[in-house]
Image (cartoon, rainbow, N blue to C red; front, side):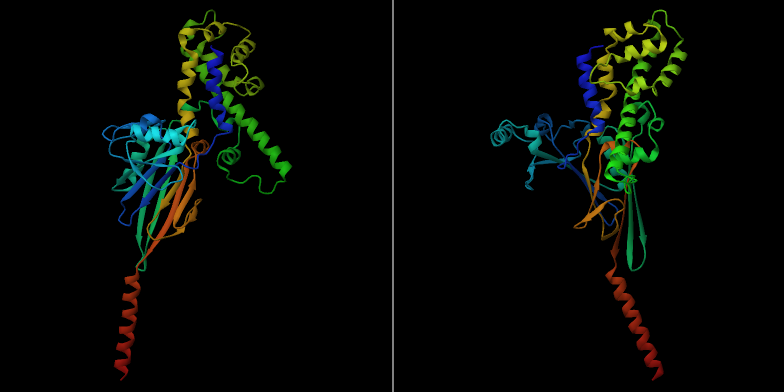
Length: 379
């Protein structure tokens, strides 16, 4: 295994413990009273996406936008929108304005599309992100005479989590601890002192790190099992190998793996566990392209933790319940990141009401007519 390239891959994976959130990237959703909706995604485009003609689709990181998405761009901090694509002259001008800086970090691309209903919108979103996770949305409309109530729900969930993370997180961290680590809820540190919170977080971090090591170890073991016919004088059968490596994932050896320092520790762990170096030659076999396999295995994971837009929602009427979101100037903001999907699906729940002024007028007229009629009869 080529340690130098693998360390680059592993460095990206360890972002699990320190992933970033880009405050500029947003996904704005506008739900209309008739059930139609609009979604706009704003993100930092690479040069290829920025310069691609509107007649061609674009691919930016893990996102794929067809020609049915309208595109525009703006400079970060400036609300003025410009038509896409960016011209070569505009790109050169941006280089002059932002010398020795990454131009992509200084601009935003805005992709917009209208939909007939929220289900169509969520399906399109799933396709845009290449099925990295699945979006599912629903909108319920309830007529209440004096108002119409709208109940919107959108759920994001990793559909192939076993493929990305082949070892269950539940074997290393409790459900509440995992949820707290990745989402902040439930607040396990609410009644703890600062020192107690640090002790708790240190323990959760160590267990999550162990889980991450276990996922890598499990994947490498699965590749070995796939090429088991190349192992000379294996100490156990393929089935026994998989069963034993599964139990090894919870060991101190895997917990203490330092993938930054030497990924060949996998060799040492297998040799110590099976009292044989039968697997060492396979781990050094260049025809298996170990570094490429690991890179491919965790590309989806890298995209997952990189995806962290703020989710903004505009509903019909006045929002009366924003769920876990925050209301600001009639816009509901949800703090989102791909890693929040790891312990469980992520839910957006918003309820709003549109007041029927005419209903109040009609009711008032009925009351006036009824009162007038009663007075007339008395006379």
